[in-house]
Image (cartoon, rainbow, N blue to C red):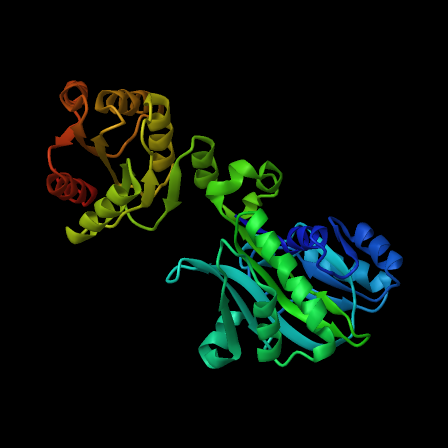
Length: 379
């Protein structure tokens, strides 16, 4: 789950990371009032979860509160990469002497967090990595020991940070590590971290991504989720504890287990089809959960056939079959469905489906071939 800039910076501030004075506004009048409180000269920043806001005109400098109101009116009427701008962050304008990048994320190869820093702040870190990778400093963090002071000092030296700022930088890096660890983040990023003309370190922008699997520990963060960036089907799936991702194909997939779901998608492609989604109903899914999954799949107008592939270990196949039949009675699908049930109570499940005159298969290969055939209009 990604957080907006203003949300990330609020969290940074709670951990002692210095941020500009400012507040979020939902309308131009609020933006004007905030600008007046900050002395008139402010930056009005669109709050949407996409990159390239500045290039799209979503970040503007206002020299007065009146201009801030005018710019807020303009920005709040925008869409940036298809997402509506519903809020703007009004921050005090600061004079910048130097821009730095600082972030912490997961390094899958080392299985450790990694602190990254660069003297090339203010631009996309991906752009720096592609153009001048040697300018990105990486320090692996032992999760048992945490970020050590000498590591932060080494980073400060490596990015040519002036010595008077070392102590502040070390403290700020430690605070960023605490944010990362205590919020179960997968990414915390300050870009840019600036040295101002009046010789302060300031987090001018902020970005955070939270591990969805840890949100049960952070109900306060879960409430910050922006639903504008998510498909309605994905929002609905989350209500039922389903893992769903919409794709561009024509064969809907309902599978229990992420590995089996990936294998199912691969074999559909092997036989000339294209999956319309990834959907994992998980273990122990009852009839209500299966019915919800099928409704979500069938809500996609591109779906021309559905392949249901269930291995009944924890999940009972007869429960899955009842869920399928319940969903059919409710949704009344107009597309053919191919079902493969293997495992606990598989015979009972197949019998229930056979009585309803559904297409069944005993092997995954057979199921994939049949689903591709019916999706392409075959008998």
